[in-house]
Amino acid sequence: MTEQTYHIPALLRPTVETLITDRSGIYVDVTMGGGGHTRAILDSLSAQGRLFGFDRDPDAIQNIPQDPRFTFVHSDFRFIRNFLRYHGIEKVDGILADLGVSFHHFDDAGRGFSFRSDSPLDMRMNRNASTTAADLINNVDEATLTNILRNYGDLKNASRFAKAIIEARSKQPITTTTQLCQAVSRVINPRQEKKELAQVFQALRIEVNDELGSLRQLLTSAPQILRKGGRLAILTYHSLEDRIVKNFFKSGNFDGIIEKDFFGKPNTPWKLVGKNPILPSEEEILANPRARSAKLRVAEFVGTQED
Image (cartoon, rainbow, N blue to C red; front, side):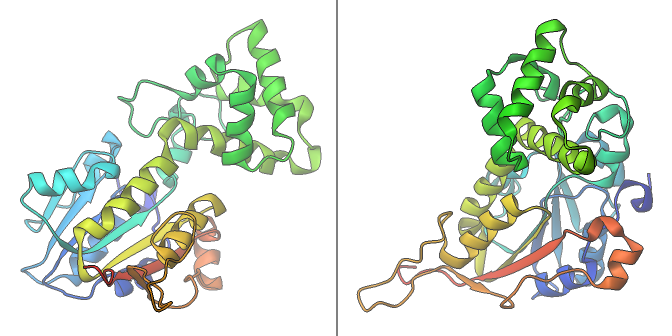
């Protein structure tokens, strides 16, 4: 499977250019996917450099680059610290996370990530995981489903969507993407049909894969893994992810509250690389419309005053 068919990496050049500070260093691509960023990083490293690639989707295995400097880890990146220790690595020079879902997931009709095709309502990035999207929406209570749709899909009328799903499943289990679309059809604004369906599917996908939990765990682990001067580069695609990353880079915590020392000096372990996030150019968006929502934030680990 080629990179073109699996995924087109967003902001490829600026991502690699801001991530790599030592061509002979050790780096981690925690979302290998189609291998686009992975191969670009390898191209930027010297013969002494090393790269670890994480991915929990078995489909990514066929994209592993045949390079002695590369080591693949078939796992959720929330376990990055444990697996690096297993391979004898305590500190690295840079970590890249390209969040969200690859084109491959959206375009593979059998995975259930898209409302554009009829398929089993799965949405698991790791097919060995126990809970599918169908399991979720057929078993959670209305209040829980409302919170999922509101918090992860940013649906203002989340309660109406949840109620419609609950009513539909009371007649028969919802097991396909088409059935889910039909269940919520009566509460959708016809002028925003695609947007609202995308919000529903996004919310369920995030919950099924605990995407924000994995992101928080990665951010929490990063200061223990990065050398001082090492960099963490994260590509986000929606405001939920971006808010978490922005707050963490700003303050070292998820609330965005900057702690200060006795003299009132900020005590944050991160130094932003660039004041604002890097966005795709008009040319990139024309060539790859799916890159439109990408934001790249990069921060350098400087440690705290107690380090």
